[in-house]
Amino acid sequence: MKLEIELVPDGCWYSNLRSALPPALWDKIRKDAYRRAGGRCMVCGKKGRLEAHERWSYDETSHVQKLETVVALCHDCHSVVHIARTQMMGDGDRAMEHFMKVNGCTQSEFHRALGEANTLQQRRNLIDDWQTDISWIKRFSEGRAF
Image (cartoon, rainbow, N blue to C red; front, side, top):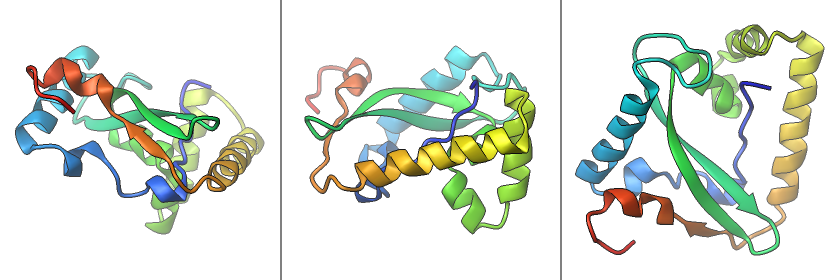
């Protein structure tokens, strides 16, 4: 699927770069994502206002949540990626429609993808002690250690 649902383990909620980094460094990182995107959503290609999204990988053996990159997404794609929050805000149907449009899939395929994302999140929730690796941002830190 071109557009995927990314559910983070419960223990990793509310830990994001924007709130953890100095504002100037976060600004540099998000603006780099916007520059790389060329003014278009990196998933659906829509032009317009973009939002920075952190992409993480999860090593369930070593319990490491690793920042892989920061990408630029339109609001609609970002709403799908964070579908749990979107649903709590009452906009789940719109996100489902966007998922189906971008992926050229049916409602059944959306529900299957959502179920798979939920199963993955439940398994990762069994790990209490996720360690965070943000070494990816070293390229922006001008010699500072993180």
